[in-house]
Image (cartoon, rainbow, N blue to C red; front, side, top):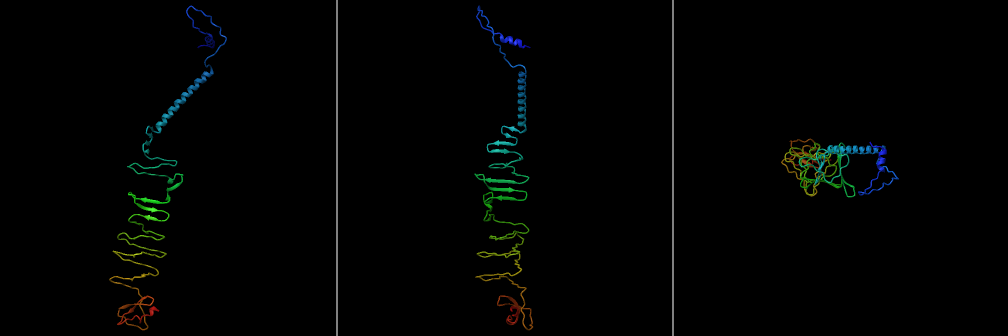
Length: 300
């Protein structure tokens, strides 16, 4: 190894270029300059360069490891693919924060499943960022907030529409299969109320009155059974301009009261129907002539 004295000697030497046959005197050096890094500075520099190389190798190794673990490729990352139509995600995915998208759809051969441990909320916002519609699927109920809720068929026909004023059912038939039927707190407007085949149709108001109104008439029809009207109080059949017509082969009034008179009469098993001035009906023992006046005490 060279010592510091050898180095200083090399610095002091100066070379000049001369032509053949020319001799020049070498000037004496008045100043001495030291060139290079020596001692602890040189060792620190080598150590710093070695540290940079180690960091470079570690960073390169970590980059290769991350690319391999995350499945980076020219078309995407892992199950996430970047296509011309947008992003395509294969398999199941978990989103820890809100997801903003214009359209979400599944593959042609599979269904779209949205699952959450608490609830699934879908919001629609306007240009100002305000929520104009919200669909919240919770563990106990499904809530919708908006001006109107509508369900359409595949042909675009409205099947079910709800707003603040009314509920519209656009299907040809509304079928209620519950054992207790359907409960309506207010009026219902429909052209037809019909039971299923071989099942009874029952219209009931437990604590209030039941009213059926129609401008052109009401038709109650039982093709293979009976029609019963039960009431705890009165049943009134009223026609303002027409008549009350009972068109049947047999008309029976089994619980009409039997009229009485002062003396005892002999009944032949035949009775006639009498009417009081207030419209009450009663039975009178039939005779050769009318006997209504003899049994009219029931009208008193």
